[in-house]
Length: 130
Image: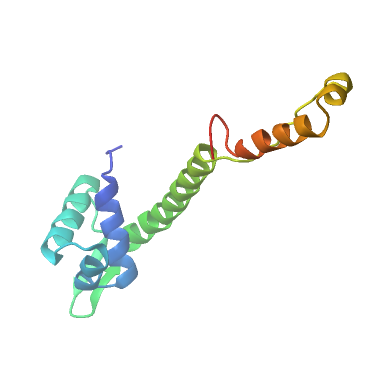
């Protein structure tokens, strides 16, 4: 099975969705020539014509439709994975309970309670300051 270049697959998906190399290139911020060349390289690697090209634009072939379905699904899964990593990286999920013995609280009184509360409010993120 041939390995795929993610950038080439993304460019193919854009062409298939826009049905036009120029509009796909514009959406991707690339030149039309670069997109055309990369889609051609992808087709060569797969040894299958993915798009029918003509005055009507660019329409996915049966091979193109198969790749398009899977590529969109894979892209959605990658986005979910990235979102999950971001959530884990900046996670402020969960809770921390601070226990203080009644004797210590009685000795320090209201002042100790307020100092403990202020320190706890500063701990909004795991492993550090807010």
